[in-house]
Image (cartoon, rainbow, N blue to C red):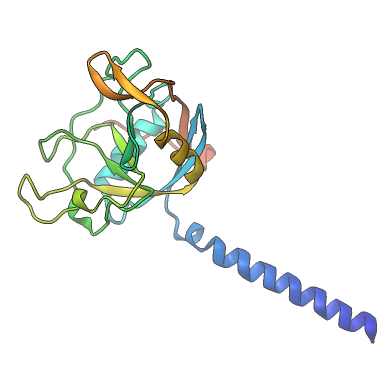
Length: 207
């Protein structure tokens, strides 16, 4: 009888553990793409939302699948704001990307802490390869209207693992380099960017 009760207790613990595991990993069942950034300061995983920002996600995955980001640096870091990458080599040479995409900032996603958004110039529809990770809740970057001032910056994903790495990058010392401000004095490099399920990833065709 005692052995039976012990067995039941073990089963209950196992079921409880599985329930917690399932709850903690519920997002993994949604089928969202996950991209890994292996950086010189650690690993970052980002979940992407093609249902909310299809053009931005497709564009971003093209760059990932074609190894565009490998070897690029975090070239702009502002403590308490964001960390930006996706465009420059360590010597601050800008890498040419594809033509710009339409801005999908009005998709309902907001520039909250640890979300991932497309970087752009003052022109609304100018995003190409560069992106940034918010290191604070940056509501002033959100879409409010369709004017140039109010259009905002398109969020297309969020960091799910490696938030501590994001925080570390966000705290590096910065300065001026090659005519650019807020450049990390200690180079922070993306050594490799790839889909988490890289074995099944296929190269997307450039359009």
